[in-house]
Image 1 (spheres, protein in one colour):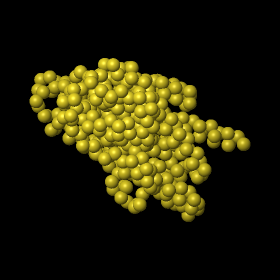
Image 2 (cartoon, protein in one colour):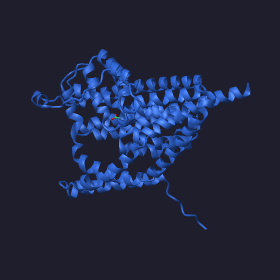
Image 3 (cartoon, helix red, strand yellow):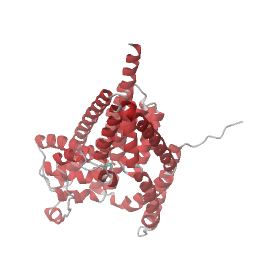
Image 4 (cartoon, rainbow, N blue to C red):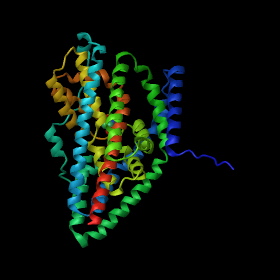
Length: 414
Ligand code: ASP
């Protein structure tokens, strides 16, 4: 008897995403003035995102604490932390360089806008924080405020300190360590319930994105979006493909297949934070060590943004072209530096990368108002860049897991 093939979560997400795109196009073409998708479908998508978001603080807090405790040794926490941080910064710097190379290849096709157009642009930049402020902001002055505001860098700091405290307390910390482990398990179970709703959320969000943005993708904006996506794809193939194949010793195809539910969720929710739980789940299924993924992935969702870095490089050069400015090599190097640092300060939420773009523009003396040119289609950039952001985190989890496994095996032999 032939067995009926069951469609898995990734399958359902793809089906619902395509259905959403179709519905979006129907509204775009048949009823372009209708606000049905925004009024009725988007709110359902928002409910889904809200459910994911409210879990972010408990997930990050308990998973990082649990990760630190299960590493069982403060020295190991340090070595995993440093290795992860270096990996994140290097891949992000490479991402900016890829973005700059690609955008420079297409520079000739970008328009120089008339000064009457550029003068009329208005964009009030939400204040981009200074680099030192980002660093100071990592360290909380209050235990609860960062959790209430879902300010993830200080939440990570709190989790690492308390995890380390529990380890340092030895026998006395054991019971609390077990409690943290139970809380982590419970949080994950709640998440699994929410994750089951992903196809519905994805359908509603996609339909609205297409219905609202479809008409805007014309002319040079389509070109610059295309250029960003070429950068995204190159980074996935070159950096992530090589990292998975050579550092983690895994088949890239199996990796991308295993990560598909997380990548599709990132694509539609445009939030690394909201995708974090699914990312942890996918990486663990693919063989990442749970104590590593629960430390490396929340950290990555907050500080590792390769897609955002590519986007910032591409948009900085595009905006420069619109204003008729030719960036020098020195300015390009400045973009690499600021975009890499900006990615640490970018929150893993929808649209945060655009706010940090002002920091990059200012660093090379470009008018922040230029963001107004691309702001209308930021969502479309964001879908790709968030997908990249979480994929980069997953490659780190796989690699660090492999290194730690090797180390443990070597220790066991000794
Ligand atoms: N939406 C991105 C993320 O959550 C951040 C950004 O806007 O670049 O990873």
